[in-house]
Every structure is written in structure tokens, then in C-alpha cells.
Image (cartoon, rainbow, N blue to C red; front, top):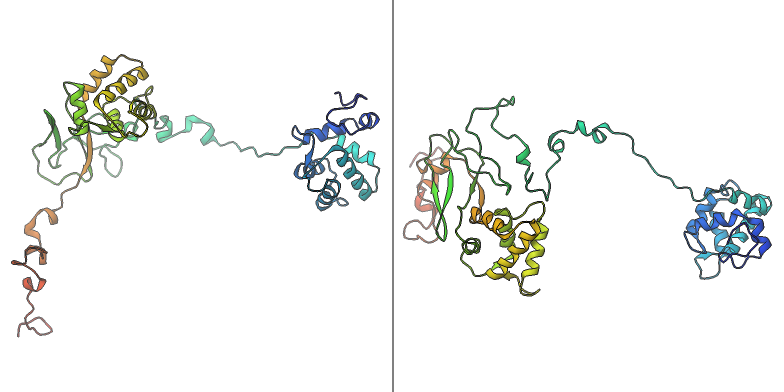
Length: 372
């Protein structure tokens, strides 16, 4: 119903028509603070009094709370419009004014006053042309693995002196989407560890070592060669087992490049859950593995043959790690001293050394160590 109409409102059923007409916009203001309900709670009642300037030196916030408690029904937490009018009468008495003056002050309101803080301008955040480092390149992504999957792909970490001048060295191998770096032998480094796949597994080989100490913390990656069949790939990842668990399935998808922008790691987990025999199963067979690959191909928007060719090119799992730098005090046993030079005490070779006294000289000597 129109609030300015003499017709009674469904919103205010207890008000007579003439009273509704007189108070006019005061009811609309009351309704705006009710947040879609027909009654007003204590918090909104106090906000209405504050926004409409009812609260002053004569009517304090405490007086507002006391008036609310006085006019509401027992065990109720909200007031109707009629009870709100009774509270306005209490405020008019405390202010020494007529109730119509208080209603006019309420009617002049445009509804709840909302306050907020607007952040000041910050050129380093707002102006993207000023971004530096990884942010200038768009930053690493958790899904666009075909573009950027590791920070090393957008950073230059080649050797340089303390002034940032690049040193002459063999170029590093291109970074793969899987986040691994191919081993590169550098001048003065030790033997680079690689692995060459053989039928049914991976065989370790080592390149010729050059003179000098190994590069501190150098990263080495062990990669597999291409495989002939998907069954061979399955066997390489399961170490010859008949079933594959969720962790190995996720590693397979990452190492073989199944994960891309369209088929994310979350999709890989969901596909594994779909192809399992039941919800209690924790592993999948080779046949379920093939069903999962078909779903991956559909998710990537390509045929099974294309995906199979990409997987066979990878062949098997990739392993990466850090090779410790050379340490002459550990590697050269001729430099060992003390108990270590004698082989050290043993817990099992009691016929050789069972106590430290057997490899130390504890005969009598003076305070200067001269034998008596």
C-alpha cells in the first residue's frame, strides 16, 4: 500500500488510517531500518536514533537502550512500529519537545547511513607498468603449466660475479614444463649423474669427471627414455606392480605432460576417483588406467592417439635431486685424524676395536705429556 494513502498498510496493521496518513515518511524510514522485516531489533533501533540525530546531550545512547527495553514486549527482542512511536514519545518528553517534532526529524532521514573507508591511491599497486620481478611477467600459475610452472622459467639464474656480470659457462638445458632441469656439466664440476632407460627399468650411468670441485648444490635430473607401449609406461611407474595408487597416478600425469591448462591437477584427481572400482578402493588396474587416459584425452580436447604418443615419448618417471659439493675432509680418507683415522669404534667388530682405549695411548705421562 502507498504510505501516503489513507488506506491501512499490511506493513503496519495496528495503525488507524488517520495516524498512518499523518506520520507519512516516518514509517518508510522505520521500514528501511527493519531490513525487510516488520519489526526492528535493538541494534537497528540504536542506529536509527544515531543517524536521525535523536541522540544528543539530553537523550544519550543509554536512554535509547532503556527506552527500547521499556516499550518492547516481555521476552521479545524486537519492537513494532506502534512500540517505536511510544519510544519517540519518551524521547520527546526528555527533550522537552512535541512528538511531532521528533517524528519530523525521523521522517527527514533518507534511510541507514553506511560508512566505509576508501583506500588511497598507490601507484606501485595501481600502475601495472611499474611491476617488477615475477609480477611483471604475470607471476607463476597453478594451472597454466604449459606456459609457466616454475619461477626458474622467468628468472635468469646463470652464473654471475658479485657485480652481476655474467660468467662464461656452458648453457643450461631448457626448463621443462614438469619443473625439472636437465643436468649440464660445467667447467670444474664433478661427474654429472644421468640415467639411461633399459628394457623394464632405468640404468644409472655417469659422465667423465673433470678436475676441480663439484658445483655447490647443483641440480640433477634423471629422466626416462621413450617407451614402446602404454603397458610399459604403466609398469615403469608402478615398479612392475599390477596396480597404481593415486600418488603415482598424479606423478605420471605430471611427468608425462598430461596436465595442461585444460586438464588440471584437480581434473586428474577427479578422473582417478571416477575410474576406481569403488569408493573404498585406493588403487587402479591397468584397464582402469586406460579408461582414465581416455577421459584425460577428452578433457584435453584431443584424440587418444595424440595423447598416447606424448606419453610414450616420456617413457617413465623423472627424478630430480641435488648433488652435494666435494669435501676433501670427507672424501679423502688419508686426511682423517683421531679415532676416524683408525677406523673408529664399532659395535660389532669386538675382535678389532671394542673400546676407545684400544686406539689411544693412556700410559703414564707428566702434565706436559712427557712419558714417564
